[in-house]
Length: 414
Image 1: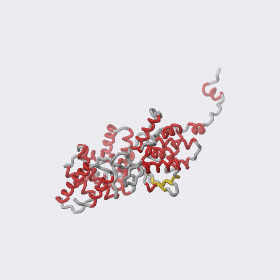
Image 2: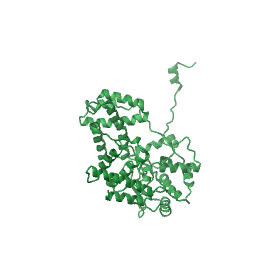
Image 3: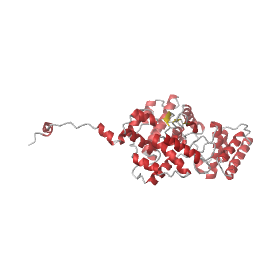
Image 4: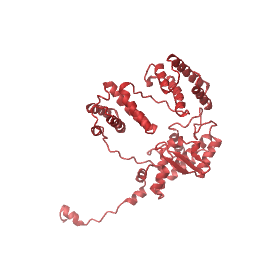
């Protein structure tokens, strides 16, 4: 298989410092893929061909039963597919493929495709996929499909969720499955296509109480920043990462996804679209943060041709993994001696702490909302609950109650 896609994958491996052993494994997979395409008389490669090959190669075995080496074949095919879709290859953790096969899986495939077309975030679609796959497996085991999944079958499925899932898991499953059922009602696919009946059946059991954010004092945040060893390559990177979280409240995903094109040096601005919400945010690039990023880029960042600012510090050089920012912050918290035994720790604590600090300094909610990129100021009010001083300002004086009130309630005092 001498194909431009294959050559581009090999160039990618070379640019990222992969070892010869990895080249051999990728080539072995692509040689087998070429043989498969020749046997099946397939002239052009696309995503579906890759997954057909994997099913053929592993005899439709469940992904979880594969060995680590066998699972790498998915990564090799994934690299080809990424180049087809986005013209780049990003390192990403191998994920279990959820296959909604046959006629039973048809409405699931339609629904998920519709979610993708509406521009939903990939993480949200993935959560829907996971929860709906459980329903799909239930259909398969009970020999059900859209035409036979009625209200009685829905009751049995909810009983299954009650037995198997935690409260949080159940609530998420209810949300995802209910959206799917409404979708099928709109298309008349169910025995009962009245969405109100399904809404009443698949309802949340508990009212969600917003979590109180864990926050750290400005002194604790500064202690974390000052604990970073900026004489090392990793320290330069971590210092820039933590400053972005502490000074701007950037989310984990936005720090990891930061690209060079987001840095407007000429106008001293940071411009990007939030990964979670898609909202475009423009922030002033302070001298402190700008110099930290420059120091990292010039003296620490690996010399590889990747658009992402922050990379792993070990070969092969990749964009930061999902937990890298959280692990970095936690490690420097520990080095700074900041006590987090009774508080949450990780990437969001800098965001929470910044918001609370701004509130304490009497910065208005709309300004904080704009800084954090919240969809509206109502989201930002969650931080009011952790500011004791501001809560005190909301307290009302207890009115004077005359003793006659008690006399009327309990009779005259003797």
